Structures are given as C-alpha cells and as structure tokens.
Image (cartoon, rainbow, N blue to C red; front, top):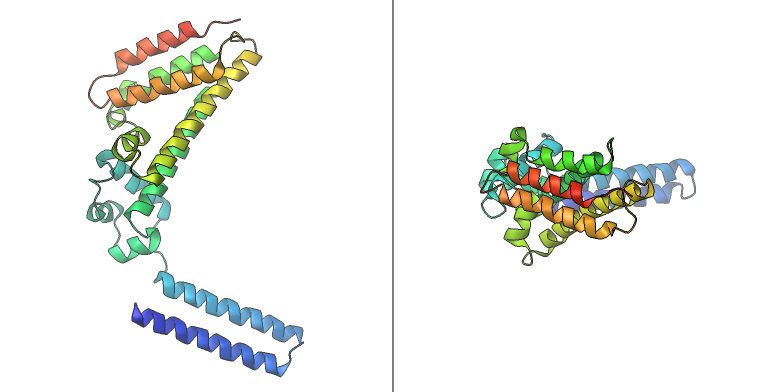
Length: 246
C-alpha cells in the first residue's frame, strides 16, 4: 500500500541519518558500535511490523487445525476463503498477514496432516507384540466403530491426490512425500521384524510395505461410500497369512 511504503521509507531514512551521526562521532568506540547495532535492529523490527501489520492476536496452531478440519471435510476447491475465515475466526487482514493466501495455508495443512499420519503409523508399527499383531491392530483400529465418522471423510492426502494430483505441483509433491514416508515406516518395521526372526528373510520388505500402504489408502477411499469394518477385518487376516514366521 502507498501509505505503508512511505512509512517504511521514512523509517529507513531515520536509520541512515542516525547511523551516519554515530559513525562521525566515535568511529572506533565499541559503545558506538553497539549503538549502531541497536539502531539497525530497531529499524529492521519496525519495518517488519510495517510489513506484517498488527501483532498476531490468535493462536496460529489452532488456526491451522481449524483450517485442516475444513479442508478435510470439503476439499480444497469447496473450502472458500470466506469459509476459512469463519472456521478460523479471524478477519481477512489477519488471515492474509498470517498465511498469505488460501493455497499457502493449504500447503501448511497438508504438511501438518502428512506429519501426523506418518507419526501415528510409526507409533503403531513400533508398538509391542509381533509385527503380525501390530499390523492387524492398526488395520482393525482404522475401521473401528469409534473412528467411523472421521474415516468417512477419507484420507486428506488421498482426497487431495484425487482432486489436485497432477494439476497442482505443491499438492502433488506433498502428498507423494507423505505416501513415501508412510511406505518407509512400514518397510522399516518389516525389515526389523526379519532381523528379529519374526518374518522370513526371503520376503521383500519393500514390496510388503507398498502392498500394505495400498490397502490402507484403499480402506480410506472405500470408507467414503461404504462400511469398511468387514473389509478391514479381511485385510488384517490376509496380511496375517502373508507374514509367515521364519
């Protein structure tokens, strides 16, 4: 905005005059050098405040969580800026100062979702019991009755792949990275199980990981149109049979 630009220019002129004055007084005095640093820091902070506007008066983490909930329910296109403002509970100025725009916020949401999904899978795969039991528990818990409402939304990463995959470079990359990280978690779990003697070493841990990942994502897709509990039980039983001990 023109007014803001004039404000920042005035700040810079103040800094330049002040620094020039201090340098002409005692060029090599350490006290003056300290004053130069203080002056420079003060003006830089003032310029930053001029760029960002007023200090943020809302919880950024909670705002991202609210946006995640909306994007997950509606998808990217249907989550309008107005709906996001309403869900987060902030004004337009605060929204654009904090997130720059809808797309930048969606990137943050996708990364948050991916991190949470990978972390949850890692916790389950590093739990107690043989790998067959851990896989069975995870698959069955995914489709448990208490998770039904959430599961009916599908997987945000998979939903985004269907809506924006191949068209939006950012979304495509973040979703692809999420799936790859999930596959690495599963591969590591299978490899460690082989090293402990739980699984036959002739099995391809990477192939098993890819197969299980496809099954997990498939469950979240089917859940949007059908009850997945019976399917999850069948998948859990099938994987138990596919993971023979040594």
